Amino acid sequence: MIKSENKNRYCEYVSYALAAALLLLTFPLRLMSCLLAGMIAYEIITSLSRHISRLVRTRIASWIAVFLISLLVVASLVLLVAGAWNVLTRDFANEYDLYAKTNSMLQEAQRTLSPVLGDYLPQSYNDIQNDFFMWLQRNVTVIQALGQRAVHFMAMVFVGLVLAVVVSLSQGGEHAASAPLSYHLQQRVRRFRAAFRNVVLAQIKVAAVNTLLTTFFLYAVMPLLGHHLPYAKSVIIITFLCGLLPIIGNLISNIIIVTIALSVSLGAGGVAMGFLIFVHKLEYFINARIFGSRIESQTWELLLVMLLFEAAFGLAGVVAAPIYYAYLKAELKALKVL
Image (tube, rainbow, N blue to C red; front, side):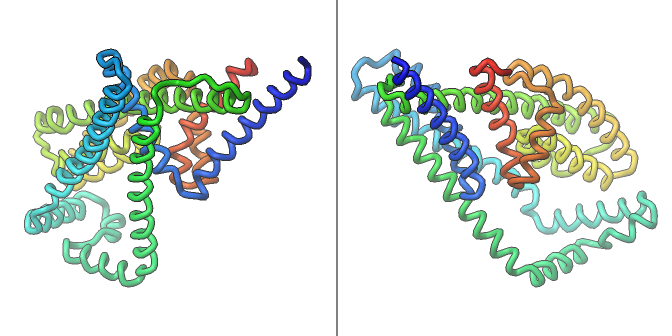
């Protein structure tokens, strides 16, 4: 009996070590995009499959239903990305319109900003083009590296989606594991899935609230004050995408909005700054309520973990930090040490 307990405890320790090693290896192996895409697609597929499984009784019908749901989820994700890209590019499709807007923005910025700051800005759209092409010539190797990373990112996202479909089709449900190591590994997977689901759902809610407030500001507040900001649709999409990054995403979107508002007029920039400061303070309470109910973490905890992960793993660490931290807290609470 004692020998069996020691074996079970040893397998539990091994499962913790394997889980930690696999999660940390996603950074040097650049598999974070694969992990995120696969987990998101898998969670959507399994969530929809539970409802379908109540309507079908045979295993073949269930397998077909899961397969069709998998195709629908993958196609929807691809169409969502394509639609967002189409909206973003449509704002900048007309070269003459972009030329006129850019020149107007630069002229207004030169007029409203102090001479010291204005000296650091380009004078016209042509200056931006020339500076951009000169930068490309000086950084050819950087562009090639970015292109390779972009291709690798898209390939890993595709692999993650395929793996999500394959795993969802191979599982007819949760199977009880007889071997102790298999059992403990399943426990690690279950807790990581729960942590991932909680963080992603919480962050999507935060991003949605931020996007709704930004939409109200761009299409209601600013027009009432006589200011019409350009590229409003693109700004809304960027706001939502940035909002998926905890804390810093909100700051990035705010900087973009204030910059565009300043290009319209100094008054518009002041209004944007005041409104976004108010929204930023409001979202501290919203974030605390949403994340507190999901993963029981304060804002300062997430910020500290994100800073540490960014220093250690770069941008991928910023994205993974809330998920990994929520998983760590779940494991510690299960061990009753937290």
